[in-house]
Image 1 (cartoon, helix red, strand yellow):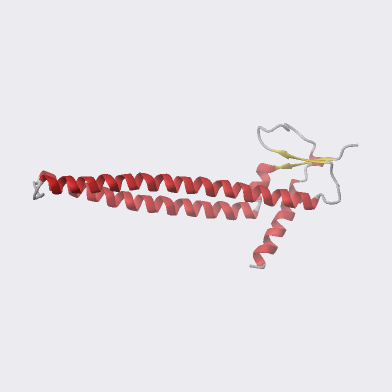
Image 2 (image 1 turned 30 degrees about the vertical axis):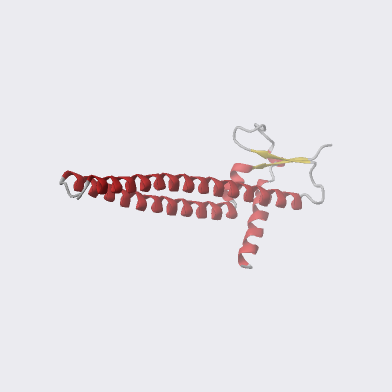
Length: 159
């Protein structure tokens, strides 16, 4: 007969040490991006506020110098918007590369695990996925998770 098994992917990702490490790195990068953007936005707001105050008190020598500073502020605002877009794009790319790294890691391990052709099919069981229920005897999540984490620990120790 057909030999099948399944892996609870949600549980695997939740407890896989590499996933947690990559998620922590991503969260750190996201915080740094937000900090960098907030810092630039605060600087811009201060510059804009001082510009408005200078306009109100008639602090510009000429209309041309006021317009020049206003143009600088508009350029700075455009640069802020570009920075925001770049940071968001970088974060999305990083998130995509994390998913790809996890997928590749899990897939390569499962292929290695099944080298002896123990199973004809190994399914991924996720909430809302195609597999609604499976007998527990076909669940190999813990075996795969233990193997993945052992491989992760070994690689981390050799760094």
